[in-house]
Image (cartoon, rainbow, N blue to C red; front, side, top):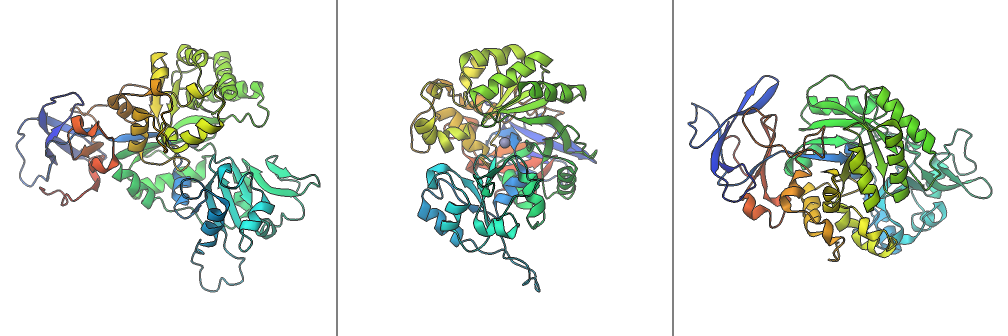
Length: 492
Ligand SMILES: [Zn+2]
């Protein structure tokens, strides 16, 4: 395939060139770059019209299955739902999933809510949720992903209303009488085996959406990833329902099928200082991962969590591919330690937009300057990559890049102006190599894999407002996975 008349560089006055993709079984690479390349007989041609041809984007922190499941869930938090009445309306309006014929004997179908935040209706528990939603069994996930709240009908459906069984995990909150409050912290695996399983969500819709954003690869950062998820991803990649490469974090025991497009990443460690963190067990987990020749990716959203993570990495000795996820609060002394240890931070600038107004209200003023830092971390010598954390953040990486540039909250306030990035550096958060999120951006050169993203405008214009609407075509392994109005392989 020949892509005519595109810009490859993000510098001013980049030359306009033609680019040829060559596909051989099992791979596709950039075979030639030049001015006025001659089309071979029958070679499909795409006309770039002077648009920027970029490396395909890689979202370095996403949760694919949760993202797919979110599309069949009720949104229970801002901006869709902002108060108690809105929450009641949203849940009441949820349509029941289609049920197979003859299924009448089965209990009423669950309503699954996502994205709940306390600004809507305070600390929800079974009692409060039942007042808002008394009818069907309801479960609502907190937007942190760390908490599920069940209503009374939900608890009854699972046989948990009278007493919690002995095997209930420590995250199952109890009232003074020892009964469930309906709140379950980090108990997804245990809940999943109780709740009637609607089957894994289809990844095709999620894959198509990411392709529209120019995404050709993702790192799935779900801590519980194991054999089940590996098989699911492998199948979705093999059948092109997931038209992108997946790097999977997960359990220390994770093994992934040998197949192009699927790789094993770091062992994910989740620190949570709302429960006591045992620093020794963190050290042990890091050592265990390294002994199995795996890097770690440590989830840190508070200052304390970052302190504990850095101490553990210092004690064991950091690998160059160890990562800190989020580093939501990173004051200068911790930024220096991050740089000294040589670990990468994978940040989510989209949270500046999506959650910035709540941060300005709720986060202690002494910590506000250190929220989701970008340029400040780079200046301290920290390697920095980007991810959206979808579905807990908006999956659109262009919105994340734009937030890294303007640092604007949804209400228009500026959060951490000193941490603003140039558009080129914001792009680089999502064009670094999958195995090195904080490394240099990839470039479109002869010999590299044909993972590409074509914009409808030159970079000199695209950089003024980073917008997914500019993406007109995406290639993964040389195959068009998305195009806006380009007739298949034909001239526009
Ligand atoms: Zn995450």
